[in-house]
Length: 142
Image (cartoon, rainbow, N blue to C red):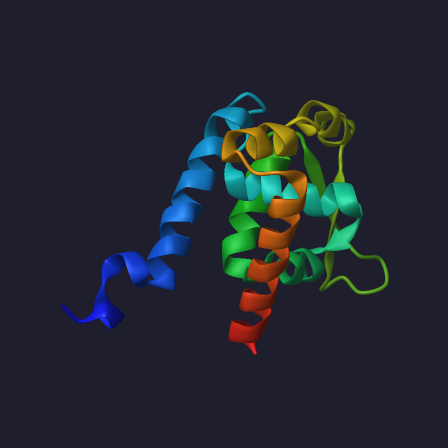
């Protein structure tokens, strides 16, 4: 058998499997918060810095506006964010947390620790994994 083509030796399969497993751990935790995984990512970006433009959120999450707009619309419908046209440039839309969106941060605070516990890795191992994956993504995105 050609070892170069063994499934277990493929980085792509390891990443795919890990992504599915991690997302599977997040799903019930985020269900408790009434969020999908992509909605959680948007809120993470806004909890980090509220009042970002749609473009800034897209850049942070590596999502295009066609994917991001429906997410923002659903978050707005849930009362977690407000979208506003920028006064200086009406072509830009800024996204702001509502009180409910800000309050949800406290409830979400335990999610990373619960995911880490489920992963069975130390904080240092998770940090190292995150850094390697970030470098991989940055290198592949050019």
